[in-house]
Amino acid sequence: MTSPRLPSFNPRLVPVTRVDSHMAPVMPAALTPQALRRRFELPPVWLPEIRAEPSFLDRPPQQAAVLIPIVLRDTPMVLLTQRTEHLSTHSGQIAFPGGKCDASDADATAAALRETFEEVGLEPCFVDVLGQLPTYITGSAYIVTPVVALVRPDFVLRPNSHEVSEVFEVPLHFLMNPANHRHHQVLWQGVHRQWLSMPYQDGAQERFVWGATAGMLRNFYRFLIA
Image 1 (cartoon, rainbow, N blue to C red):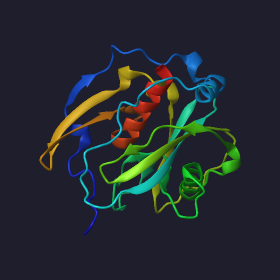
Image 2 (image 1 turned 60 degrees about the vertical axis):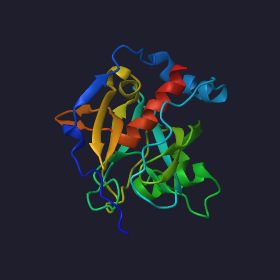
Image 3 (image 1 turned 180 degrees about the horizontal axis):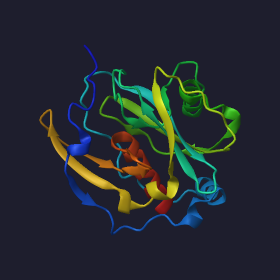
């Protein structure tokens, strides 16, 4: 069985059903390193909004982990990758650095740090892990643990050109503002599939953040706003 190359539709052309402009953004004071650290040390009672996508692949689930790297610039930034076009699943999509857990990994955090180093060359010595968000199950049968971390900005990246075509950053405050969260729905493979997008205009280029990456960011928003 071959893995599907997603999407078979162009997600940019799927109509927007609503935008959450009525919802409050996370305020800048809650996005400082000190505030983020306190939030993980004393987490609120909350529920993630999205836990699982409709499955499109009949295979046993696999454990995976991603890093949500918050780069400590004057404005906190989230580091993201653009996956190369030839990968078997989720090719060309914007993603957090990360991947499948190995038997040699001590835990999800170790897997996220290892995969991040292998993908983009970010050394663990620059990374200060804050904690984890609830697992997110993708339609491609990955049970993903998002690991949130602060990252010192004096790193030098060495992206793996086989997996990553580009590395870029998006302001955390943009991603934590629901006015930038757009809802989409499409009938695909006989199932109504819904997802979020958070397109960010990076100069002349639109960074189309969507799918599982946007879903995990939405859960991060819910965690911070709770």
